[in-house]
Image (cartoon, rainbow, N blue to C red; front, side, top):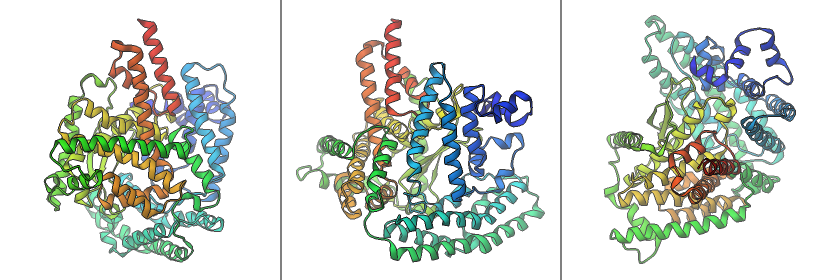
Length: 606
């Protein structure tokens, strides 16, 4: 209950579970007395409309609210329109709050930034590809059921089966939006359509008892003792029936639709190829980088950083005996082809990778010293990306812990291609996804007290991903990558993000083809071709997102250097990290202002 109180606040909890006059006013009033209640209420109202969000949050069950676990979201166009209307109304109420204290004013500023962004994107709400090979609706549903739907008793299994039964309604609602996009000429590139079809076909070709929706449930049921043995087989049989009579026919309906759509899809890959795509990309860059940088600026920053980082890598390779006379690409490929840096291409080899990742994380967690005052309470673990989607998934990703602390943060590693996991890259990837990267930043934000809920989960990619890339650099500074090859792994990861600046803007602003972008990334990173292909295809369906990492990292290093110069021997790395982390994710200009305030306060105190 402590976590629940912290997240929703005592006042908001009262609104949810008691009917007193003040609570009723605060819940129903157009403008609540409390500014904090208004902000939390706005987010809670949206969460309460999303059964899947309520499940992911994981706090409602602690007070006996479980009905949402039987349902999937309303994915209709009407629901989407209602959300935009609700948020537009909330923005007008937000503007009415005056005479706020400093922290409240910061919350108002961040909230307005988000409201303005949503308002800007409303016109372009259909300018995306909800079904795609990266994180499309076709894979999100089974992934959600596997990773988020907890199985604790018979009711939770019945809720699971109920959700399977709603899959037809859910995807039929999504079809409304697909047909609107088709009418507007917003059709994914042909390769995206083909990937989606292939993934769905592979999903339905499995016998129902081998499908992840069945096997995941079965494994979860084995881990609880609260399901009577006499009901066990019947519950599994009901699950099998729903997969065969509802889920599979629904996916076959989607396959039929996309098979027809494929003939209309073209081979141009950038967002420029859809109506008003150039303006959509400008908005995407603004949203993901939280800057006003143009595509040309970002492209040129990327080119300069690629040159700088490649020179550093070549210097180290030369000192380690590699032939660098022919330049970067042959030298980095020689490193990539060196068998001493790879695990056996076996199940045992892949299992050892997961164990070694955990050892790396345990080591840095114990050795950070006074570099951090703030640390998350939530634990974390390493898992393999589910087999059914690892072929088209990224190299790794992080899943945040549940708010109630029952589910740890998870670093998911892609082990599909053993050549994509050289030993010299593992430390950097673990620091990025885990400690002190995503796990520290996201889990700390979730655990912050005394600030509105939305600030603990704000989706500012430049800050979030910039921090994770900065964490790689920090780990090297602190001595956790003293092996020269581990340092190459760090530099190669930073190079990868610099290349992203070039290829993302190349694809979406300079009209590069998918093949041209793949060729550039292969020549300039030394990454495995499977990873490069997956990455480029990711940028095609997520315009602008890939530019956030390097832009965010460079800003964090810039403001740190400013603080070090201004404070001299009064500078504390731990205090600096507190300033960056204690407010949750924020736009980069606000982050810089917070650091400036820290510098001023520190100087005034001396």
